[in-house]
Length: 176
Image (cartoon, rainbow, N blue to C red; front, side, top):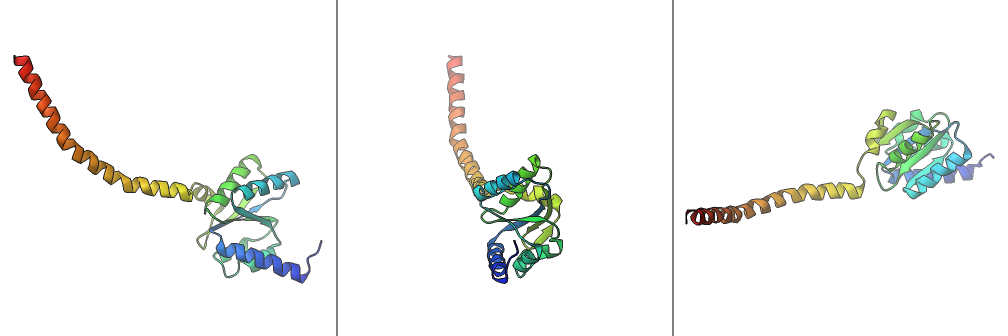
């Protein structure tokens, strides 16, 4: 079904709004996937806060213009599905990586993060980025470690004194 000009404008504006607020974007070729497989991919995307859309490349090029994902314009060729991470920078990469494990027809073509176009091989690196909660947990562990060590050091002084007094007591009991 052909799109009229108004429909195209709506699609471009919607995609541009998503691209403006997204953290990362993945473009993957979906040639050969069945409707059921694409439905499964969309379901997984909804559950992981990833905006997933199949759109004409000419409209996608207009939509990413002026955003961090403008670097993807030259690579938008062929049948592509676009995935934008809305909350977590690595969410789209994890989604595509996990889905590609069971569906070899899905081929990641473009990876963009922070205004830079990365190679498809960098998908693993982006997918292994910690989530926000994991990053906060790691930061708290790093901040807590010096305090724990300081508390153990302070506790060692009276502990050493107690062990010394106990050793003297045991020595006197053994002599008696």
